[in-house]
Amino acid sequence: MKLLQFGAGNIGRSFIGQLFARAGWAVTFVDIDEQIVAELNRRRCYPVIIKHPDGREERIEVTGVDAINGTDRKSVIEAVRSADLIATSVGTGALPRVSEMVAEGLQLRRSSVSIILAENIRNGATVVRQQLQRHLPHDSAVLSRTGVVETSIGKMVPLMTEDDREADPLQVFAEPYNTLILDRLGFRGPVPAVAGITAVDNITAYVDRKLFVHNMGHAACAYLGYRENPDLLFLWQALEMESVQRTVRAAMQQSAAALARTYPNDLDPEGLEEHINDLLSRFANRSLGDTVYRVGRDLPRKLHKSDRMLGAMLLAQRMECAYDRIMEATAAALRFRARDESGQLYPSDQRFLEQDLPRGITHVLHSVCELDPADPVENELLSRLSHSLDV
Image (tube, rainbow, N blue to C red):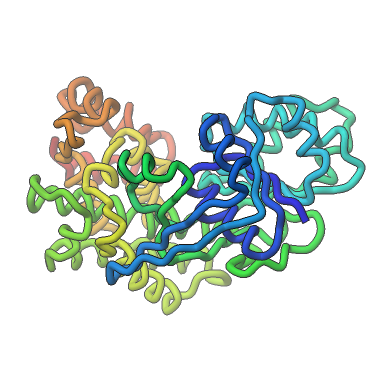
């Protein structure tokens, strides 16, 4: 069986490629990094270094792999034609280009195939189907035999330094967590029998769980930790503060309560509480090397109504659940000024702090968060935040 994996980055290699290669699949990566492609074709293997919370490192050798340069259009299209399964982990910016080549390859196929989207985007199947359709004849039957499988990617990738990459350009670090949650109903044909795959019938519930519990809680750690001590470097240091961990846990529990009401047949309170406990333990993994700056940066995106902070509050508002702890973390986000190793703000944060924040909370809620006063639920949140947040 052959997997064609678009994207040979951290998730592509440490997660998707690793799962399928270790299950006996032949994995071909598509990437535009010439060094990575050349090394994969020369060595036909790569190491994954598992960073355990106790500081222990475990080395896994992933074998049976090769690669195609993403600029080699002809080879990529042929690989799409012959693959048994396709997966992507390229980011939303590169998906349109990938979709164009995939559409060409799909037209050469006679058999059905499924595409796993390891992208962490909401409604990803709809987005990709629309992108594919732009490059297919209007009367084409290609999409009817193409499965598009959404996922919830919960795996966190430890930071790698330039020295790490220079030591071995193919090595990639990973945390022990190795579960790929995906949409059972998105497949054309059976779900692959691969250890680590968990297929669910309502992927939206798990995508929302990832965004509003995992991502929201992760960011809340950074914002609340920075509030307590602007000199903090690592996320684990924030979680060592009892006040930070207590508020982060409470915020995650508020999101969980709203999710349990939204998806009562998929997410139960006990399971969500276990998930929160697991996440807090994983966030505190020192071996990840995750920084307060990296986790909290890009405020305009993370404060948008469709993202982790306001998105969680809107869900709670709709479900008539409390969200004051999430609001507290959001207030801390408005005072987040963490800088990188060279002392620089993230570019979008600098623009936000210089151009948007000085214009006041009303401007931020309307123009950055894009809350719509014509929507009753959004207007209620807008009103509450306007009176509770201070820039």
